[in-house]
Image (cartoon, rainbow, N blue to C red; front, side):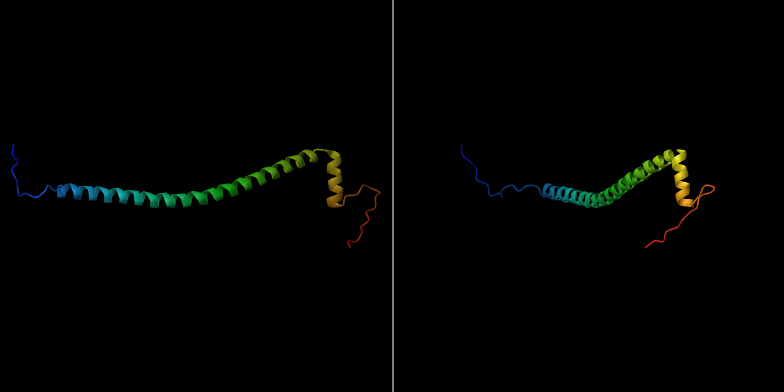
Length: 106
């Protein structure tokens, strides 16, 4: 068998398929770029909110400690001896016949 020589050019891929590949590639790159920018922005917002959450957790812990102190103080105020001691100290209460002496602070 003999091959017939043809003077035709070698087959080139279709120009349309190259163009389609470029368009798809550019579209995918655009979407990935946009998603990256959005993710970067969201990460910044997440970091800022994380700082706020930590600050609020610390404030809540401090408030819880204060609440416990106040509960103890309320329990102690129900004790008549403690209540009398507190009144005498803060309001300079004296019993009949007692004399209150003030000492100067240095």
